[in-house]
Length: 386
Image (cartoon, rainbow, N blue to C red; front, side, top):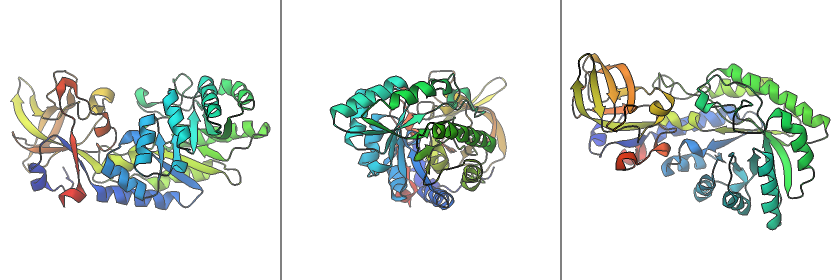
């Protein structure tokens, strides 16, 4: 296995398990993202649900990105981090009244509206404040992302968004509401998408929907195509920065923007996943009848993706240069699902070795829990450990 560079001696001094963020890699990722997106009238909002570690958010804010939020807590976190409210979009299928009021008071850029009842509630709450809420309709384009069914969101049977069959009713209603202003349309077809043809299909559908609104004399200043760009979990060392050039090229070539329209993106995983690792210590190496188990002090309480999505994370033994052996790598939680990977080859492992679970910067620390009364993991950055 080819291993990334880690400050191993300094990692050994810290209490495991914990998250480690390579902020130099994060900055390089943002540099490439900005380089490729700045060639057109594109605006990128970072999806806070991927990671809200304060040090990570600070680097992203300094790069000038906006924020994509899916809860009132995330809206507040974006504001607290110093992200301009004029760059904050607020999505989510179940926005509570307090969350809507917080966003209205903060004068955010836009609500991504997911249903007729939500549209009516936003209009009502904005009216009480004497405000006009800018909204974009989240439309289900019925485009398959060809990804795990838990993270597919753009099909007509998903709980998210407004179906195509409802467009006449929604557009008719919105013209009667006095405290909302339709400024755009929003889409999000899923997550961890690596096949660019899925985004090409989205572009074609967006063009068709644009014609629908144009035929009704409705001017849209903003198109938001969500996020979903995947990363390479198999080879984080060779593919540490996603192919942003190919990603944005799809939208330049296939999505037809009208004059003065801005195209918005909500990217999370592709920005932060590769810069983060979960660092753990080997508690035991247990020899079974036909298997050998490496039991870590990290479990699904720290990184739930393998248990929840059957997701793969490359695991590197940072302490060992011995020949590879085959293991089932598991955690200490009292659940059979607390397994990171089975029949996995890595450098021969001993009690006390330090291992890194790679590509854990997205949906890792943010989804940690205290099941079994475990403590939430701490986090450290490359800047701190230099």
